[in-house]
Length: 221
Picture 1 (spheres, rainbow, N blue to C red):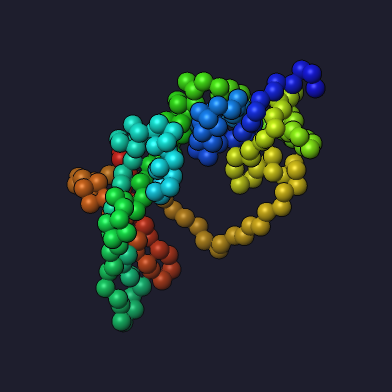
Picture 2 (cartoon, rainbow, N blue to C red):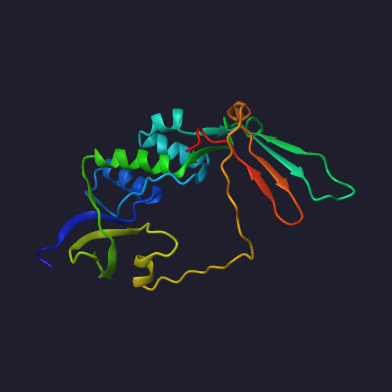
């Protein structure tokens, strides 16, 4: 144990949640270690950041990302395409109705991860360890993390941000409740001549067998 690397906080998982948490702790003065390797490969997947997440990213100094890397979703349109005889008219919900600039901000996952990883690489007090966590031992006053390369890290607080199939959570027997839906999703990327960003409106089309969503993004791969 004398050869363990000691930190104030250990964070396992280098996705958006882990990266953002590591940046926040380090910038508040905690000696922080982030365990994991950020994956910024583009796959077309996006996430809609709501107001609280955007304010959190702004507090972390991620202004440039929010200025050019996201699409504000100012209107949500819902269309009934179920084929019903008495079909309700399309409904639109405006962000201005609840005093917001946007209902959410759509950003590609890879763009978000890269921006956070670039910030993490230059943040003082934040150590990046590109390994995977194998197990953790908890005592009354500290957590001791074993890495896949045989190295040990310890800290007073450990954060499990390693996803829905968390090895860390499983190793300390934290129970979760999960379920499955009898559905499958098909995602496509569409290029068109018009500038869809001018409307900044995701469209939800309700259908009997499967709903359909269309969401604007900054750019295609």
